[in-house]
Structures are given as structure tokens and as C-alpha cells.
Image (tube, rainbow, N blue to C red; front, side, top):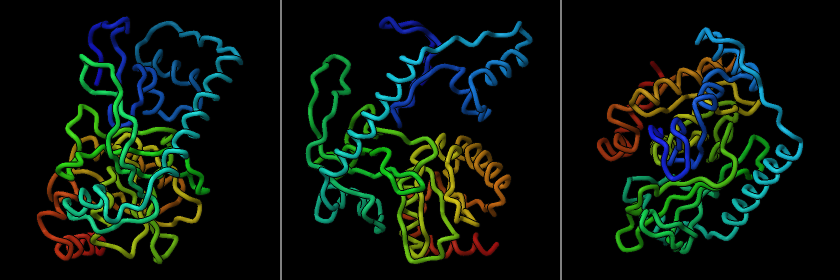
Length: 291
């Protein structure tokens, strides 16, 4: 969401990704799009595009850098503690939620917690409360936990909770993913967008390793493990998914990694799974892989 007008003491022009909790301004978006190595490079590109005088890069004190690093470390520590406090999903509301969506591919990257801290989405109330949630472990290529994704659930229905922002991320997602391993070749990997989208592909293709980047933005930022030789990009069937897949494919090509695209017939692969069934989706995916 982009803030068009100043409100609550916050300036216009800022944005918030409610899927991840990230926020920033147009410079942050340009920095991510260009993949610039520094803020100076990003500002230079903005100046070139706008035809304006050179922009100066504000000096950031070492204390500010230390404080930012400490805050990030604290978020990662909280994410690890939250995931460690969860329990296996079998027999829980999380299992009901996944199976209701036709998903049968679980794994140690998923856990359930009956009472996860939640700030009320009702803007008229600032009172925090708790809600059951599906937890997903975010890791880097060395297997270190860098974050925890939370999908808040309605305990009465087993469906996703009716909240303005039922999916949230704690910790560091940039370049990382939620991973599901099989006994397949370690050189092949299916990289997907949303968690349910990726697990739907994994339900139809249980022999493949999976990595879910959780959002289209982070799909484009995924950093592949060094052992990977071929990646299948399982994106959503929309403009954001197409752009993210193209950005990732370009990066993979520069790394010498073979890349193929998997595009659902409907909006995403979970819709395909529910429409075609496990066997039907498997046939569609295998045909696309052979094509």
C-alpha cells in the first residue's frame, strides 16, 4: 500500500507491504529494482533518470548502523524463539487449514502455535490479543533460521483469520526462503511465490525440493544455494508474479543456473490443485517440465 497523503504524522509517498511488514519509500523500491550495491549508486540512477543535479548521500553515523543491526538481530532472535515454541502441525488447526486447501506436503519447516501475539487489526483498538497461527521457518542457504512467517487462523472454522493482515513475517526474509526437502537430486529446486502456492506444487510433485519466497518481491530477490544447477520458478499467474520470475531468471542466468518457468492455469497453483486434484496437477506440471 502506498500512502498518498500525509497522515498520523507520517509523510506522503511511503509504502507498506502488509504481506511482509516491510516499509520504505520510492528510493527503497528503486534500490531493490536495480539491485544496486549502495545507496549512492541508487541515487545516481535516480538523478540520471530525472535529469536533476546530483543528489548527495547523507552520512549515516556508526551508532545508527549499530542500532539498526541490533534491531535486526533482535527480530531474528524473536523469530527463532517463536518457531521453537511451536509444535508439529498434525492434528492441529494448521493441518485443517492446509488440508482444506488440498495441501498434503508438510515438513519440519512448518509448526503450529495456539496463541501467537497479535496486535488488533481494528484501527479503533490498540489492544493486543493472541490467535492460533501456522508458523513457517525462514532459513538462509546454510540452514540458519533468519525469520518466522505467521499465518493467523480462525480456530472455529480452520480457515485463515479474518484480519486486515493475516500473514506476517518476523525477522529477515531478503534472499532467504521457507524450504522443504525431499530425496530428489540436490541440484534441482522448485522456487515458488506464496507458501500455499509452493506447497500445492510440492503436493503434486513430492519428489522435488521446494523453496517458498512468500511474496513476489522476495521471489525476485531469492539467492540460490551454490549446489543448485536447475531451478523451476513456480509463480502466480499475474503481472507481479511474471515480473518477479523474469527478474529472478535473469539473475539465475548470470550465475549459470538453468531456469524454467511454471505458470498455473488459474490464479495460482493452489487454485489449480483444488480444480484439477493432486493427480491432475501432477500431469500438468510434468507436461510443462517436459515441454
